[in-house]
Image 1 (cartoon, helix red, strand yellow):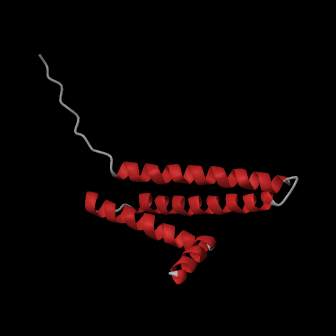
Image 2 (cartoon, rainbow, N blue to C red):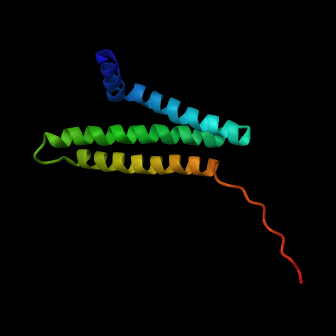
Image 3 (tube, rainbow, N blue to C red):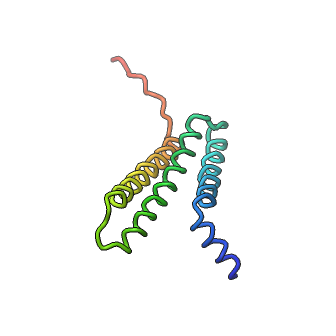
Length: 118
């Protein structure tokens, strides 16, 4: 049990491994859903989703790094403040794009109704 816990802590603390795990889980889920729902996965939407996942992870680590620096300092230099803001905004924007990609994948397609002429 300790080995599994240590492996999870290492993967979350290592940005590269965490990025790859998120790409694998979210990207794989999107790809499978697209294959089952539409029969194909369009490369442009899939690539944009993957870039959004990487952006979200990068934003989390940028904000986390700025937050770690900010905890130990009594007065904050501008790079720490702007780094934290940038990481926060990048994370939120990327998560919004990920949610939009999944929402568009599961959106219902309706045929327009023909109008009746009296």
